[in-house]
Length: 166
Picture (cartoon, rainbow, N blue to C red):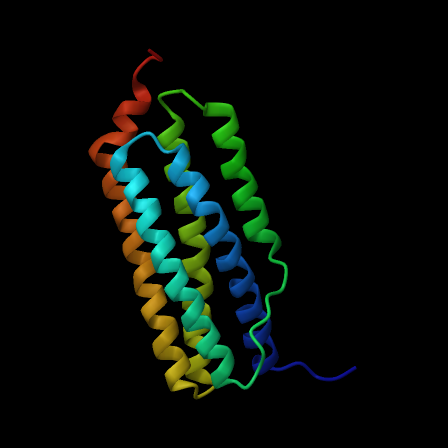
């Protein structure tokens, strides 16, 4: 059996987040349609556009390391997105729907933040400065999205979730 190094781990993790981003891109329009609060709907739409750019940056990282941009099934994102689907089904038409959607979106963001933080660090250790710069850009976007979602939650969504159904 061949020895696996940080290069291998970097590539495998890159494939994992590439798969995850593509799955997230497919789920964001559905979450935007389900959102009741206009600001949450807008946040999902904004993140959809950002995700397209993040996928393009990942493709650039694959080019930097001389590998084809191919995803690898990410069980973690599959589970997180399944929980989001469950919330949409169970809370449809209820005041707590947006709070649940927001929580599901933040679970996605937190997963992405951990992956991009790790990949950026590994890229730096591996001497992949251009890759580290691209990954840092995405990490900053993901962190900002997480902060924006918290602001939306605090401004209206959580208070709205306390109200009885109409």
